[in-house]
Length: 65
Length: 269
Image (cartoon, rainbow over all chains, first blue to last red; front, top):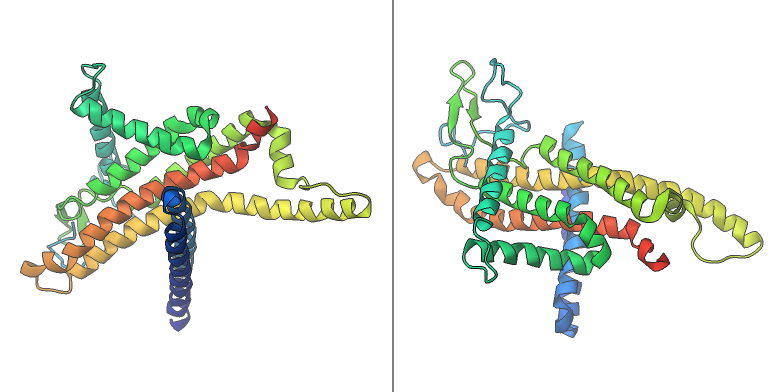
């Protein structure tokens, strides 16, 4: 069905944009303050995980029903 | 990893039992994988602690480095008091997930098995431990139970509910009533987000690992069998990265959730 593929596609689009913005901001922050690279890494991993989690929830929610 | 027999065959969503029909039909192929990983970790720990010496060498040195760096990593997230209580779970979960993920990548995990002559359905003897929702859900629910226990013991039941429902910040007069009602409603949103956590944790780990295995399986089907290894070759390195990151993410999120709820304990001491 189109709606299923469309839903997963949009979820992936959202995830992609989210990770993109997160990555760019993390790179900027590390550039501005290289000393704090590890805490920035930890924070960006946490938020990347939340974004990925949202996408995977959407992908599985669509396929399961 | 993927089945060379029926190239590009669909990795079933649910693990199957190689002992179908016998008394042990409840043992699924991913359970065997997790037991294997557990045995490997236990043997590694025993080897590391066989002859303990002050100046560690060899396996003991590696084991000490591993545990110490994990401990320090979680210490600067959780603070000294909390990490003492909770590190046994986070360290063990991280090692188990990492070992299970990397064991699942060894060639032959999904390929050794028997093809059911009737349906031609291929059933692997082994399957990635985390490519099984039961395993990831089990870990997430265990964590959820532990999280409740740690929160109650750390900040007490009253503070636990105060932390969720009580208004934060000082208000006076009419504003106070409005705030109380508003924060009470926000409390229910907080409860919702707390309940979603184990679901999200288990789906995230399961989705990433199962998706990775599915990609490898699917790619195998694109080329003739004798060339089957080529398209999946680069994805193995991605799987190595995903395995590490997902292990780190799972335990990191668990640590952050514990910190979010139990951190107030320290201020009041």
